[in-house]
Image 1 (cartoon, rainbow, N blue to C red):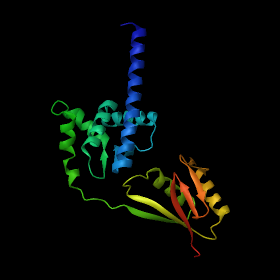
Image 2: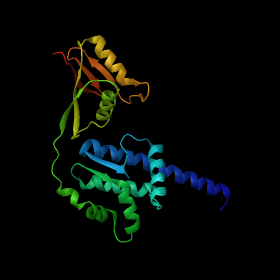
Image 3: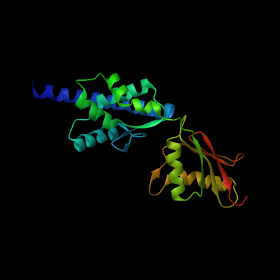
Image 4: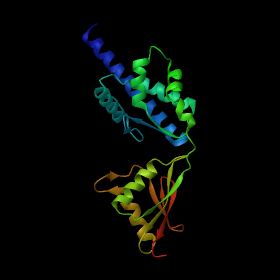
Length: 216
């Protein structure tokens, strides 16, 4: 095989890996927002990651366990988790891919997922909880960001209100919205933030979050 053929083959393989990462991101999002199933990779959060971050995490995991953690196996296993409709849970995809690499000659992926995750079907239903933030300093804003980025059907914690001091007027709402949009340390919020003066609320990613005065 010529050097040019080797180069073209490598390019094609990298393109396949990136396409697989795009598909994995879609499945991760579907599982979280539709079923409240969070996939992690050896304790690393996968929600809201881009293609390069996913591939870098897989390479890190491969180095950590000294075994290949295949993006292609990860996609197939994640898809099978979605197919089997597990209850709300947190599942370590990295550990599953690692174990499947060891046992792959004994199982097809559907059977592997069924056996390894059988106890998950016995978990009790989790009731979502409404969250009220008291204060909207830097810590409060970071918590608001995290809660809203992960908001979805069946989400376990839902930001419903923010309690602050002083009168709630248009100027205050705009100031709160601006502080949430842009943080000098943590950068821009990857979402939309507006205000609803009539409701005295912030509209974060389309969701109404009431702003309440602690003086009331």
